Image 1 (cartoon, rainbow, N blue to C red):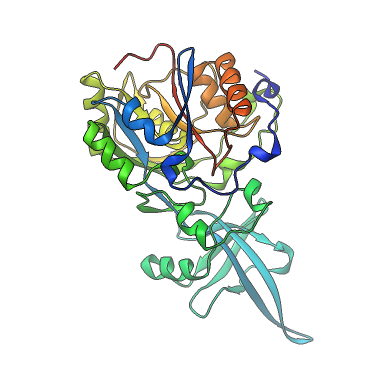
Image 2: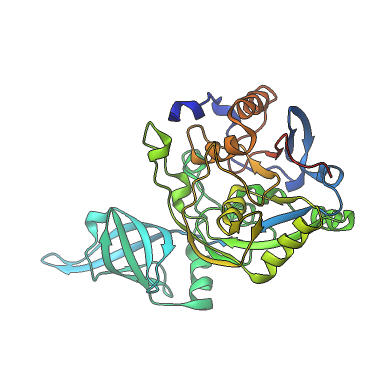
Length: 354
């Protein structure tokens, strides 16, 4: 499979820089087998059936972009430099991997001061990244980070405008619970309280799993043969309760529908022989055409970047020709793309009827 197989031309004006308001008013492309229809997200109450189960990623995005100062005593006395930091992921020893600009202006062992409360020591570096040990941990760290950090908007939004206070709510899911992501599970951004209540009344069930989305989700594929691409790793957890709920739905003949590619990748990581088991750890699962889905019966997801691993994932689910038709329809109908854009609900042709 060639990288060019997953390319398409997207008009610049279809890249969304703000979400729909209210969240559930976004457009929803509903594709089932060969059929495509134009709906809105709140129509999920009519589309989904009693017994369906939505799998939701409850990771919480941290305000991972920080601006600080490095102070140094030298021949010219006390000097300082502005340092920009983007947190990438926590490490097993409690440090954070981070991108630092300019990296050349900081030395191992030096401190970066972000506020009167928050600072970090540079403990090392490798592969263009630095490792930071913050002066605070736990809730104290979360509070101090929230006070000074900005939301880590995707590059295609950040290139058009800086993050602002609205993004602290807009770029966070309604049910965000476990801090650790540096990118949002964006299909979930379309849900709000009234929609969840209406779905529950309809008889739709919900299961929460956790996958901390890393900055690697935005890394481009650089190989011509996509089978040579190495996926980034992200930490996730499927609890015993979550596994039991999903297996019960499968046993009862219900449909398991992950909301977002992150939830799908996690449950398929934990799945074997049509069932799912509790699972905790890093996953680098790469879903491309030819993949056999064990648990997911469908997928709710946003519209993805050309030549991305997520385009490969939805092509694996629906078939490459069908995805090309779906994306051509979305572009012609003016759907908004990427993280703050509109949504799709995808069911392969062989999905069982409700």
